[in-house]
Length: 273
Image (cartoon, rainbow, N blue to C red):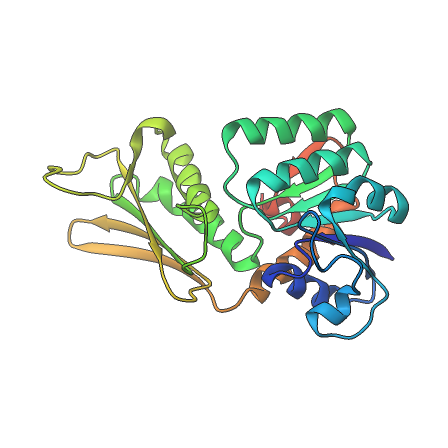
């Protein structure tokens, strides 16, 4: 039985993850973590998220190390915000707890900090900007198409709900990185974030990036390959957050047997490499 700790346990993603874990035959929730000094502290997380008592108490993040040492989960799942996730990952690593992380918006320095902690403590990790199975197939298709349509103009458009804090989305950034790497373009130079004013003709090298925020859009990503006389659009739409949760469950099963001290991603989990 895989013991799982969930951060942001009472939020939109955390509650869905817990509800889905409860339906698995090979997993159980052993710890629920919320924001530091949360007023929910001490309540049963099942009661909070509406599934009834599951005998798992909500703890504030200030007690994370203590909880991990006591409950000894096989994996911790984090879908929170970048600044909090960095500390969570470092604490988990120090407590010898493997991590599955879907949080986005990390800076390069934060990624370096995370990688160092995972390597030094030799824990197992899956970190991916989007854990939906379909999105990761979407990434593979983009890699294959980029080399074929290497002289087409490329634009990336993503849309999310109005509460999303980071832009562009981690998924859009990953799509850009895959395409730029496949085409051998310098990622620091070719990305154009939106356009305004008299910008002139686009260059052959540039890749456009556009972020839309509004309503309750779960997550739409479109990559447009535009050539002379035709265009191809590759689209992934998440209808609900359950798409991400289903991928998380696969990642948890994978991470317990993943390589130590290495950050795996969903291509490893799904065998897409």
